[in-house]
Length: 317
Image 1 (cartoon, one colour):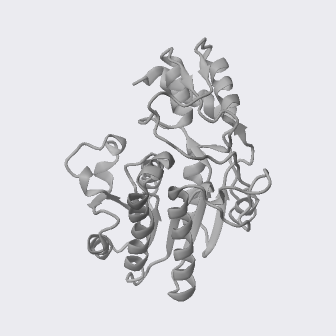
Image 2: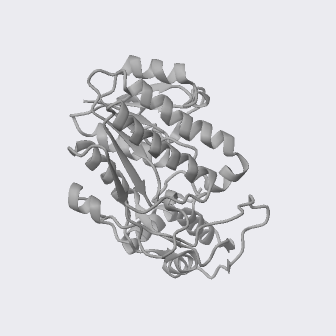
């Protein structure tokens, strides 16, 4: 079966591609931004010769359509997106052009493929946004996105559901929580805390009381592979642990694990991009995925943080 992965050079996309390439059942291709064409893509150096790579910007309808016509995938794993939430407040048009319009372009291109099996869309737990009660969110709850980024994802979800009902597009939507275990990027919270403490730097926690659900990359990759192989269609699934942790508590756990004496500061760092608001609680209930897909996280936070810490001790940038 032929699988096209958007965002194949990204954190999650590259790991999903790596997993699928090891299996003989899948012919894997990746979709990259045209700006990536002239530069070395470090995250997929080890698999670049084992998959086809195509170049197109999501908001270029004709380019996206041409890629789909050439490769004719049976499955699309639409993982690529603009994802830095704080940046979306400064660039709302760009985020919606890429994330929402890009999804529309991929959907209509997929509808032209005769033997198309499934469109798997990477949404986010951020679409739940601000809720009245701080309990793990379930898929039947209303969406109250709190950023231009999460609005672009929620809008894409609605478009997919429409396309499923009106045009017969087979789809699945994944709402995953925050993922950690990066090897090439220290800009996200777990990797930022670990690498800053290892370097003896101050750690700034701008929202110390904010609670987030965290999932290890191995469990996130397994979620995509499980959806790909399942018979489920036209469903939405949460993928998380249901065990929220405050950012201050997370920093203190990592500090103890590393043995750092570095200072934890409960403000944003100097020059940090303006973010007008942040949800106080984001955690998700994955009972539906467990029941229908037989999926559940296997990597505990303790084990996952130990793995991430050991990696950055050996590979500090």
